[in-house]
Length: 160
Image (tube, rainbow, N blue to C red; front, side):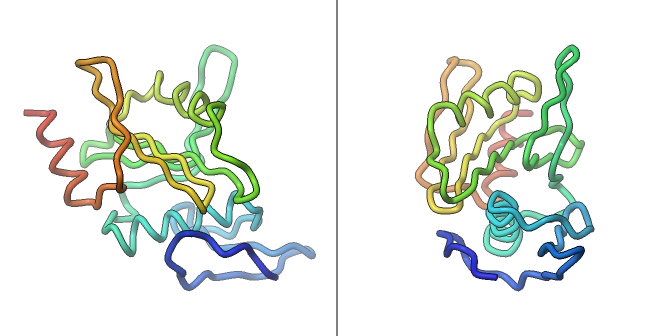
């Protein structure tokens, strides 16, 4: 199966065919899931966070369910601190989809509930990371996604 080349480092994907469809092993959910275009981006990005930026898989979760009244929402990936407090939300789109204002609106709704420090949006080709500044009611777009060490430093400073 040919997948679009992404703007992320390659990784050793564990693929298999189940009931006529290709699945990929998700290291966070510890199971095989359908390999959709969005899942292709998610798996590459999670491996990028772990293997390149040093995030331990134990501080991340995929497909995190949220509830607002009767409505169920699902964050693609959430990164937690050592006290299991959410600190980063990552939203993925298929590479064929543009990252638009609607995508930022979607992740902002999730953040109304979680109030994290970082928001990341990626379609595998373009990645956007912003740091929340709640004191000044603004956000700052960053040039790079922070590695785990920098991530820990910034969230630790806020808790002091």
